[in-house]
Length: 302
Image (cartoon, rainbow, N blue to C red):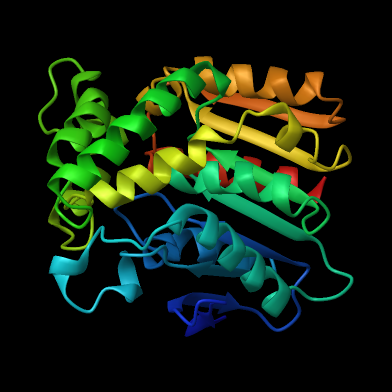
């Protein structure tokens, strides 16, 4: 196994960095889009598991996250159109590192799950399989529309690079409140206390995002469930939608369930939903994560 720092130069001449975890004789390539307020290197154990099963793994950090931040004050600051730009970055990553003849698997968690939802609309034939993890579905499209307009207004009035404290209270704050008798405001991430403690202690996790970040995220989510874009998804793409039964992002399973129903209605032939009992948002970091990773592997290899 070989882990190394990599980078992608965008069409706008931005340079975004991340990591590659590679093996000598890969059976396929997995490309990760991470969640908000985290970063690629948090997926070390995830990548190591798939390396052990002979898959290459790649992940580029989102704007304002991980390796793309030189100063912690830059965390959560993104350019205009960051979401759509990053969807293209993900495809640039695929084009650069995919190996001809081997399957391409796109994995997205949380914010990354919405990036993958967009990716499979824009780049319909560039992946063989998609894992859309810790996501939500079309039940929130009205919320995304209203949220986008609110974030646009706040960005203009208060400054797009200022910390989005109010917008964060509406989003992350609601997730925190979903856990009764919580010990921390990050308990919604997982039942695994060690995972929550590591997240809180990490200087590059959970430290807030800018008003502009929320504007661009909600702008990206706002377009996801329009019929003209949904119809572009490759009907032969294999899709797995796993989520925790107690994940507030997906309204405790309602969002992922509606997303799968939507994809099936579109005529996508192979769509699978799995809701994990006694798990919250980060199912791949829960106490029983070994079973989750085995399920991911089984989907990839079927």
